[in-house]
Image (cartoon, rainbow, N blue to C red; front, top):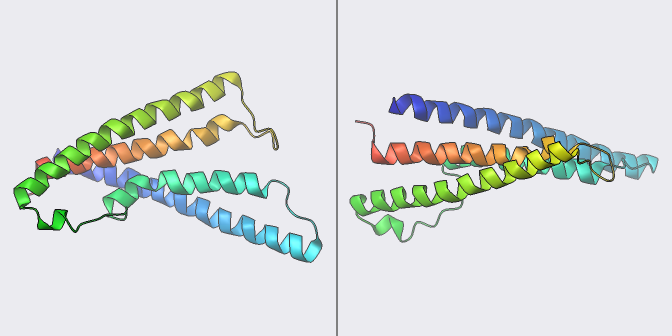
Length: 161
């Protein structure tokens, strides 16, 4: 059961990271096209700033869980590296529980924002793009992070034998 849950979280995080990679590639292509069109043709792409912001949101949020899974978030280990294994374990449990609380709150609050935008039919002022699908990326990313924190908690409480 433990391994299935941890594997499920890992699979979803790989999917989130894959979508983030596609968004990053699209961001690079869009900015490159913008520079070429502006410099060579004198005709910039009007919505580049807005769309690149949306793509950056996807890159950032959809890769949160994957980064945690692989230990790629910023870590300061000069104190934790000196702790006894038992104390380090309980520090990790505490950290996961606090992280789950904050991440759960962020997931719910950003989901409410996206749902409100969907209900109201909110659109971007400049490009008339519906905002709800773009805003839904944040709670999705936070949910992936929440799931990975839960997997980390399970791994900490019940380490493999």
